[in-house]
Amino acid sequence: MTKILMIEDDPEFAELLTEYLAQFDMQVTNFEDPFLGLSAGVYNYDLMILDLTLPGMDGLEVCEEAARKYDIPIIISSARSDINDKLASFELGADDYLPKPYDPKELHARILSLLRRRTRGDSAPQAPKSDFETKGETIYFKGEALQLTPAEFEILSQLVHSQGIAISREQLINASTVMSDSSQKSLDVIISKIRAKLGDPKRIQAVRGIGYKLV
Image 1 (spheres, rainbow, N blue to C red):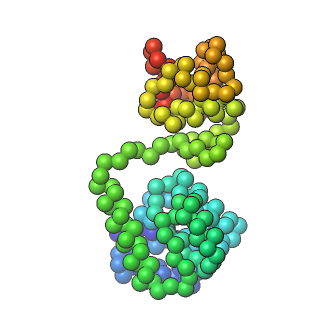
Image 2 (image 1 turned 30 degrees about the vertical axis):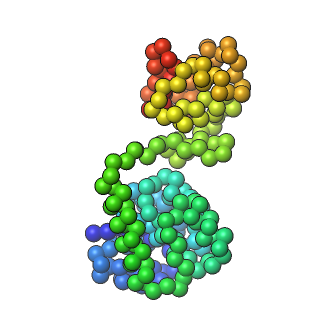
Image 3 (image 1 turned 90 degrees about the horizontal axis):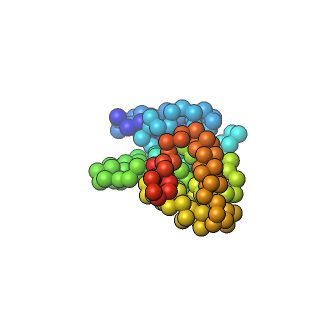
């Protein structure tokens, strides 16, 4: 059975889609409140259908948070016809955009297409999804923004960019605009502070004779 998470504040429309998809062994769970939808164990579902006009939280915000935190296909189902909304949806992580009104048959076809692509992708070896993500001047760890000093940001950025590869102390120092060439001890202090902010000291390993590695 395919489990679908829907966030849609029109109960009649949600019921229509739920009943239609049920005949194809697709179980839809709908939440009218986006906050409840995001806290409903998104990782337990195979796909998300998301409206954009929602109470208390714009659908684009929901899309961004879901795409950042969870590995789940997202179909936008919206009456908003502005091309900017459509472009923003794809930029924020949506996989498809279906403007209302539409025939439920088309939704079903698009769900099948996304799930087929997901199945093909899963059949090939893939690198594990990183817990780290950099956006602008902010680094996210497991979906949470880290509060870093400029020096901490520069060092962690280098480690994230080369995750799994040991980087020498000299490389880390030279890549920083804040530290000086004589900052070997300062580097150790910064690494220690980053480890504390991650709450997982083992994520940054010291590599004897070389420097540090993010794992």
